[in-house]
Length: 307
Ligand SMILES: Nc1nc2c(ncn2[C@@H]2O[C@H](COP(=O)(O)OP(=O)(O)OP(=O)(O)O)[C@@H](O)[C@H]2O)c(=O)[nH]1
Ligand SMILES: [Mg+2]
Image 1 (cartoon, rainbow, N blue to C red):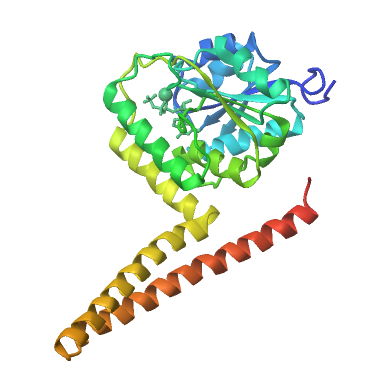
Image 2 (cartoon, helix red, strand yellow; image 1 turned 90 degrees about the vertical axis):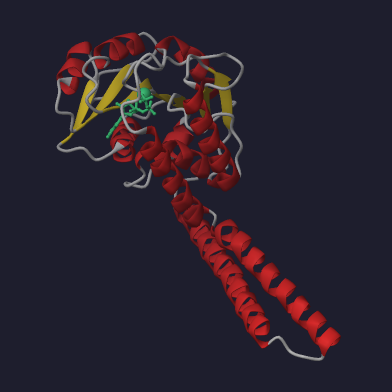
């Protein structure tokens, strides 16, 4: 038994980040409790009755004094979960879009040790009532995350997931990560060589979107760009560097061809060619240096940190 909760050792936990979800949180907690040992709700500075209702429904409620965003809410929730040494953690949304009845299927690969992260995918052949334009946005963000992280999934933006203890240990998000945390998980999984599997889930889209979807999409995309610059600097700097260098060299070849044809040096083109080539080389080297520093830091962390 763990002293803090009175629940059996290595419990299965659910962590739910909630912001002003008093219409749904009660039923989400009650339904989720059927499938896990304990539900943890992180109330992120809600101004409605979210915290009280979640507590009455039987959840452990952790409260932020003000709205800090989903990334910090999940850091708080997973931090608490870690102290309870769970054998698995389920993440789901507080607004009733995820069906808790899918939790056993989501947990199965984690509990049998075949996956560290199981993602409930909306795009594996089981249709949900998702508006088409939202599917387009979700697929675009998935394509960007897959390309940037180097780890392909059919649905990178699903918040319905199960995590193994190893994944729970590794999932510490950038505090300003906001709604790009699902993408960040993909980067962290790639970096820490975690095994990800997907299973099909059905989600409900009965309500209109709560936030401007374009603003939301832009925020996630911005997050992905920051993530790729931090997690994969060689890719982030190397690809544009090679393109700029190739442009510079192509222009250089053109300058040489013109000189051979007209015995006259195209000074302007020659200067642009040299400039582009230098910028390209500089950018590639920036990527190589940052990549090397990152690898060095990762090595020293690995030799000092847990496994
Ligand atoms: N901690 C925290 N959680 C939030 C915040 N905004 C939303 N959430 C929670 O994050 C989950 C997903 O947020 P939603 O607003 O439903 O995002 P979505 O599902 O992509 O968009 P919708 O289709 O509009 O529902 C829900 O459980 C929300 O309560 C926030 O500012 N902080
Ligand atoms: Mg939602």
